[in-house]
Image 1 (tube, rainbow, N blue to C red):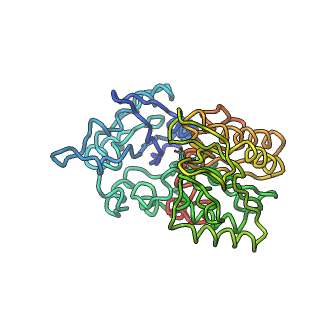
Image 2: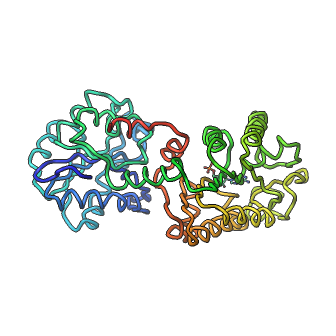
Image 3: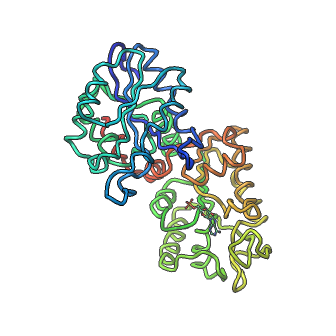
Length: 399
Ligand code: AMP
């Protein structure tokens, strides 16, 4: 954020894709708050801010007559709330580019904030269209990207637009800088031992991450639904637990690769099993490789919790992505809770911990432990791709 913003207009890509209730009230404003430091900094430096963001997927949810559902997806829904947070009036432009946007941008004064209409109202956004991006770029002299959550998409407002600004006229915002710095602490020369905790539903969603982790982690703790594919690949009986039959070979290959590289993989020794996928199901602790027919593992068991916690305690760097069980149902949240507590404890003793990716973020928030870990990422898919070692288009375009 070392550009000179004074008396200039800055186009800022933020992620205001917030959840809304049926009457379009914001139910969680975390993403808006996360962008405040960048917006305030530019205003304090004597600049004017032109914000752009997407909200939902308006192109995928067109009205019956094929038109955009403006009422549902308009960014107008965030204007008042942002004004409250900034303690100033925020202007709204009912189009993303065009005559009115050009006029409003031109008339914007230092210290003022303007929000453009949802970037995804334009088909050109997701296509990364150059002509559309060029029109956006003409609204301002400087460009700041603070939308880490969409940095893995080569869209017009996240990537293409940056190519129309010279290197000394564009930079990352504070949030984006923080996300990159923290992810790099895990990827580049991490303090060892480095333990990755991977959970969630499916192996297939995380193949690339697992491959990459086997290249650079010391320990890999695998929980959640995906663990049962590994357990079955090792010859275990897993009953009705979640399994991806077409990934059994891959699981074996990953296990062999880890063994060869000296990476220790820990699978849950025991599971909290249930006779159906229901909070009110009959429950019992079972060895994960001996789950009876008709039963399914829905959480890691107490032995596994203890073993995972011990590994976590001995780690200097911890990466966590994905819950250990069906944590949305209270009886199956204990494993995720135990891991969250262990990560918090290790952090209090000096370990660096990064929680990244949708549901594990929801889990630490739900358990009130978000401020007890070193960093909670705001970018689910983007963080995963960054950790997989891919260069994100939104980052590449800033070079
Ligand atoms: P992901 O989005 O891949 O991180 O997966 C998160 C989802 O995985 C959550 O909705 C969990 O309920 C689900 N999940 C975690 N453990 C299990 C399990 N043992 N069986 C079925 N689903 C699970």
